[in-house]
Length: 200
Image (cartoon, rainbow, N blue to C red; front, side, top):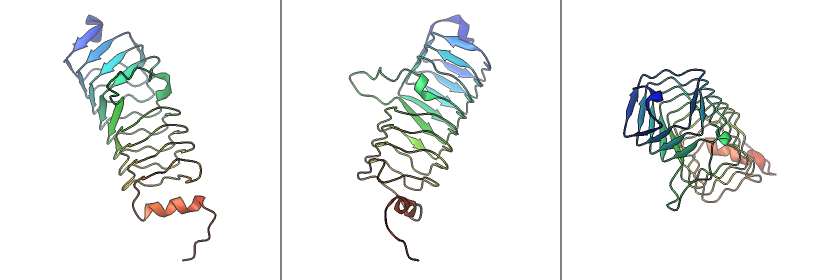
């Protein structure tokens, strides 16, 4: 099925689509599944993704201006270099549903600055050199994710789960940590931001 056929799609499966360096505009997808699709450097302009699944897809360097995500899940997908702040994050609705979940995805070089990702999942991902400044990750599941060189400043990590996560540099004085879950030995890195002397 080609995307040009309609403006709205309900409960459709898209397998093996290739749309690179193109513009997909004002399309609405409800309860749709995308599998093994190639959307590298594609612009999703003012699109809607509601309760959708992206499985083993490549959206690297895609742009998301004014697009809306709700209850959308990415699994085993490549999402490198995406500025997620370009999307529309204000339409959450009365039920306060989650926007996005990521499972075993590559999120390297992404931008989530100032976004509300309450209760979202970012599990077993590669999130290297990602910007999280001023984001709200309250209750987020970040277990077993690699956060090498990612930036956490002004981030609300209340009740977030970093069990098994690695390579994070989180300053306890510059971020909100309340009942945040960490595991040893990685959690020792939190002590670097404190005015203490560690003796081995």
